[in-house]
Image (cartoon, rainbow, N blue to C red; front, side, top):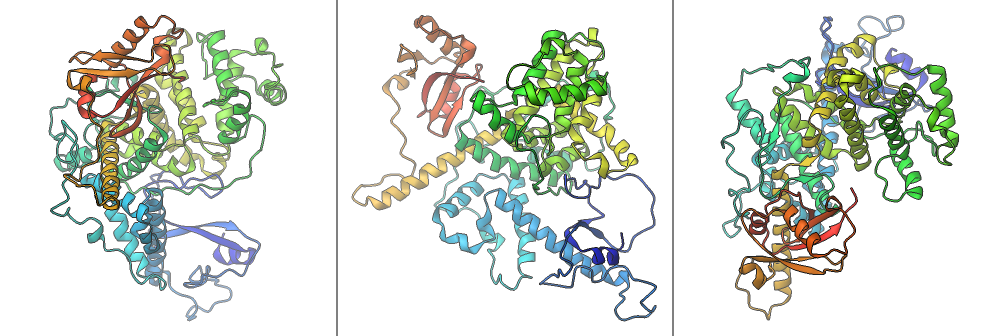
Length: 639
């Protein structure tokens, strides 16, 4: 549609997109461009385009610049060839560059706000002492590549803000990232280097994932050492060509998603947002996240209903539900009736029958009258795929769908895996839990591949379009674009399934930064209390650590169990004592506990962490040395 036609109908220019962008802009309500297709076209003088949506108001204008349609294509039937009003598009480069700069500034502003760093560009927040100190604590824990990612966006935003008349002053980036003052000593955690991380050059085999050093720092080293390196493994490599990655052993325990308190998870998300951006920056991937959009959705039902609405419905029937009940029930039915069904997930059910079943589910699922015994395996699998596909917003979210597409641009599978790990941590909890339930189910299907003939490649190829191409997606892309995407998205699904045990964990370097933030916050709070209580003599500005119990000083810890009859017990610390051993000892001493060991968790509470459910293989002596003032509590846990 020409710009004059758009003006006659009334349009809103909703955003500017550079033709040089590496990633697709995908959203359920906006026109979509997919990953670039290798098509030879004449060089275009303009550097980008707007996305357009219809609007009833035809008299829209940009208050800070030319009108929305100014500088558009010429009408050869009304404009003379040499008209002053008809600008040569070759002379519009500065116009488009300015529009791109403004849009870029808005994106950086949104990114900094999401990272909790709005104070870096909004002077009005400087009066908020808590916000200022929170930002200072957060920034003090960043690695060099993470700090560079923040600094790059602050600098870009400064250049944009200087163009706005109502912004006379913005913070200088050199002030934000100034070196520590002499009296400000860096915080150290026991067993770590000055910045809380081990040397990046430590021994590491190709299949070991080092989670103690920031992924962006590892990528920086890789880039410096392999400037001319290219991806050597093809996304089409068979199942047995995927490396058998494993995490480097961490004696303080692996932290899974769901093990931390909400307060610490909030810190995790901020750090992961900065770290993922730094990782994409280091790899030279220009990533632009889409904003969440509002779409018309059903307020009740099962299919075509937002995840949040479904879970709200389910919570009224089953409190604590994390994955929609309809999805859980379909998965259970398929597993109970036989994972050995040949072509499971690949062979579709009869379309007419599936449509009727869908309608029957809507009316009889919650009242328990649906005839499950009559539901065939292939029909159940088709309903499962339909449920995912009909979600009004993609399971991987509008904001991060482009980032998932871009994972294939990383030069090694190790970096692809690291990027996926960070992206999963960024997903909303409902999306993350639902995706995990799906990939766990896919893995169980693959375990029966001898009978059902569904290998990792088969399942990935079949499920990729259902996960990535959400409702309405295919109407927005060409057949050629969709074909070019197929291999890439199938490869990403392969990684999600194959490495799910690694992807749903929180890297240790993120945990180290969380601990550093908690320690720094305690130190600052202590200094504030000291100022208010001038009568107390201060001998140190370190946080008021609890006195280490006498038992601990003698090599014992006191484990509390307030939910059970045996309220507490003393446990001797040895080099081989693990969290699982503590639980075993507790169960052996309290016979009244009617739960399995798998239903119990030993928690680390306080000190430099808010709350953390410990991995069974956590070595207690090593963790005690890392957090000597923590309390140790046994509780029942429902995963």
